[in-house]
Length: 195
Image (cartoon, rainbow, N blue to C red; front, side, top):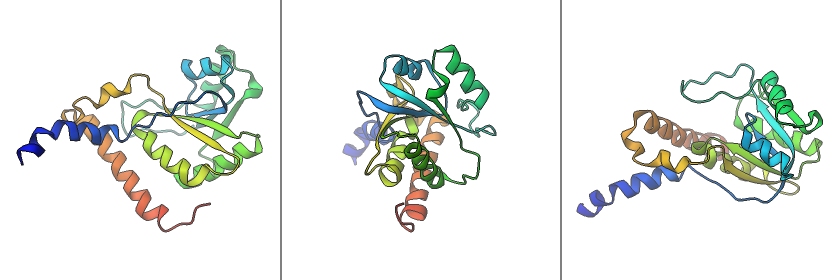
């Protein structure tokens, strides 16, 4: 019992960091994200990605007030122009048009990527959602013709895991992420075939 108590902080830290995936990559056909950031624009300007696919929701409502919202279509086009991203290299994917859940989203995204000749993509996601993103990509997107990488949208995200269990907002956020992954794993993934 003393051993468990003494290693409690280490175990809690690892429970938090399990949610984060950050895969290195050299170059990809596209970046997929919910908003254009300076980091993404820099990848584009450096030639490390040829296209930017923005997954936007114009009716995006975050139930966590402190989380950033995704760009609207107008915001995305404005940022792209400001940071020198050619209009032809920006693909705006409106997630709200008939997409009910994450599985439908990834199936629609796979179709969009194939239609645009994209064979490799880097997915930028909030650090605590990267494990779930990798899970879905392994199940629904990776395979013949499409290679994917998952990267945290935040630079110094490991700091957020320091003593996260003492921060009510973070422990609720991480618990919600674990519950979401468990729900999809048992209810969606085990009972539906891979597409």
